[in-house]
Length: 96
Image 1: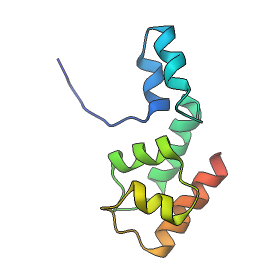
Image 2: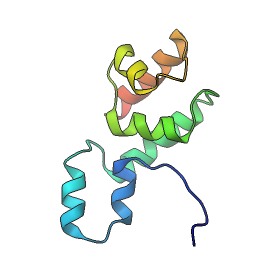
Image 3: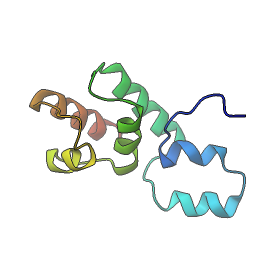
Image 4: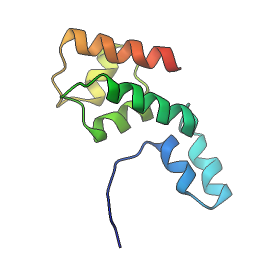
Protein backbone atom coordinates (compact mmCIF):
# COMPACT_ATOMS: atom_id res chain seq x y z
CA UNK A 1 0.00 0.00 0.00
CA UNK A 2 1.34 3.42 -0.97
CA UNK A 3 1.07 5.85 1.92
CA UNK A 4 2.87 8.85 0.56
CA UNK A 5 4.37 9.86 -2.76
CA UNK A 6 7.30 12.23 -2.64
CA UNK A 7 9.52 12.97 -5.62
CA UNK A 8 13.12 11.96 -4.92
CA UNK A 9 16.33 12.70 -6.72
CA UNK A 10 18.52 9.84 -7.93
CA UNK A 11 20.92 10.38 -5.02
CA UNK A 12 18.10 10.20 -2.48
CA UNK A 13 16.52 7.13 -4.03
CA UNK A 14 19.72 5.05 -3.96
CA UNK A 15 19.22 4.32 -0.25
CA UNK A 16 15.93 2.53 -1.05
CA UNK A 17 17.48 0.16 -3.60
CA UNK A 18 18.55 -3.26 -2.31
CA UNK A 19 20.46 -4.64 -5.31
CA UNK A 20 24.14 -3.49 -5.23
CA UNK A 21 24.43 -3.74 -9.01
CA UNK A 22 21.55 -1.31 -9.49
CA UNK A 23 23.00 1.02 -6.84
CA UNK A 24 26.30 1.10 -8.69
CA UNK A 25 24.51 1.86 -11.94
CA UNK A 26 22.48 4.69 -10.35
CA UNK A 27 25.58 6.26 -8.80
CA UNK A 28 26.95 6.84 -12.30
CA UNK A 29 24.19 9.39 -12.89
CA UNK A 30 24.56 11.55 -9.79
CA UNK A 31 27.32 13.74 -8.42
CA UNK A 32 25.88 13.86 -4.89
CA UNK A 33 25.79 11.36 -2.07
CA UNK A 34 22.45 10.79 -0.37
CA UNK A 35 23.56 12.82 2.67
CA UNK A 36 24.65 15.77 0.53
CA UNK A 37 21.41 15.56 -1.46
CA UNK A 38 19.35 15.65 1.75
CA UNK A 39 21.41 18.58 3.00
CA UNK A 40 21.01 20.51 -0.25
CA UNK A 41 17.26 19.79 -0.35
CA UNK A 42 16.97 21.15 3.19
CA UNK A 43 18.89 24.30 2.23
CA UNK A 44 16.72 24.85 -0.85
CA UNK A 45 13.57 24.29 1.23
CA UNK A 46 14.80 26.80 3.80
CA UNK A 47 14.90 29.48 1.09
CA UNK A 48 11.07 29.44 1.28
CA UNK A 49 10.59 30.03 -2.42
CA UNK A 50 6.91 29.58 -3.17
CA UNK A 51 7.58 28.77 -6.83
CA UNK A 52 9.65 25.66 -5.98
CA UNK A 53 7.86 22.42 -5.22
CA UNK A 54 9.22 18.92 -4.47
CA UNK A 55 9.37 17.98 -8.16
CA UNK A 56 11.44 21.06 -8.91
CA UNK A 57 13.80 20.33 -6.03
CA UNK A 58 14.32 16.77 -7.27
CA UNK A 59 15.15 18.02 -10.76
CA UNK A 60 17.61 20.55 -9.34
CA UNK A 61 19.31 17.83 -7.27
CA UNK A 62 19.56 15.52 -10.28
CA UNK A 63 20.99 18.05 -12.72
CA UNK A 64 22.79 20.56 -10.44
CA UNK A 65 22.51 23.51 -12.85
CA UNK A 66 25.48 25.86 -13.00
CA UNK A 67 23.93 28.91 -14.67
CA UNK A 68 20.62 30.64 -15.31
CA UNK A 69 20.09 29.02 -18.70
CA UNK A 70 20.45 25.50 -17.31
CA UNK A 71 18.10 26.29 -14.43
CA UNK A 72 15.47 27.73 -16.75
CA UNK A 73 15.67 24.61 -18.95
CA UNK A 74 15.19 22.34 -15.95
CA UNK A 75 12.30 24.42 -14.58
CA UNK A 76 10.52 25.91 -17.60
CA UNK A 77 7.19 26.33 -15.79
CA UNK A 78 8.43 28.01 -12.60
CA UNK A 79 8.95 31.63 -13.81
CA UNK A 80 11.72 32.44 -11.35
CA UNK A 81 12.87 36.05 -11.13
CA UNK A 82 16.52 37.12 -11.20
CA UNK A 83 16.95 37.20 -7.41
CA UNK A 84 15.39 33.76 -6.89
CA UNK A 85 17.53 32.27 -9.64
CA UNK A 86 20.72 33.72 -8.19
CA UNK A 87 19.81 32.49 -4.70
CA UNK A 88 19.22 28.93 -5.97
CA UNK A 89 22.44 28.89 -8.00
CA UNK A 90 24.55 30.22 -5.11
CA UNK A 91 23.07 27.57 -2.79
CA UNK A 92 23.95 24.84 -5.30
CA UNK A 93 27.52 26.15 -5.67
CA UNK A 94 27.98 26.05 -1.88
CA UNK A 95 27.13 22.34 -1.79
CA UNK A 96 29.03 21.03 -4.80
